Amino acid sequence: IYIDTREQQPLSFNKSKDMKLDFGDYTMGGDNYTYTYVDRKSESDFKGTLGGGFERFRRELKRAKDFDSYLYIVTESTISKIIKNNNYSGHRSNLSFLWHNMRVLTHEFKGHCQFLFTGTRRSSEFLIPQLLYHGDKLWDVDLQYFFDNYGIE
View 1 (cartoon, rainbow, N blue to C red):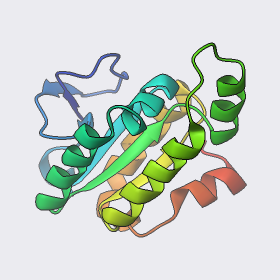
View 2 (view 1 turned 90 degrees about the vertical axis):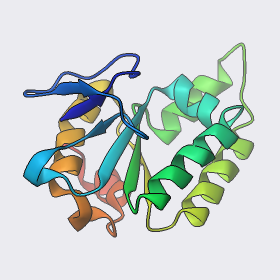
View 3 (view 1 turned 30 degrees about the horizontal axis):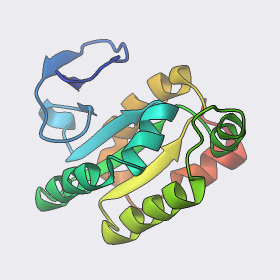
């Protein structure tokens, strides 16, 4: 697994290597490369990306689309946790605006991205190698549906 050199708090994987990626934080190399990338987000990073960082992230998704690649946006929280934490935060986000922006990107980059909410960093660490290994075989699968109904691990 290649890990972008700019990744702030990289996850730990067997046989990983740091490399500057044009988009996303993780991808696979060699025979397992399928134009599949993962952009990992903490809860606060997710909110910042879909708020003030929206246009920058839109450009990142445009690069992924231009390379005919697929980007999973993996957030280490759940929608219910984001809502709950926002209610108790001293710096509340306009969640309706964030959800709207998420839908805009999902429609604009249909076939090139999917937002996933894993709940925890540990679950993301388990899931990301699976996403990268199975790559393009999962691009048309609504993975969040399966996570919500059957769990991740």
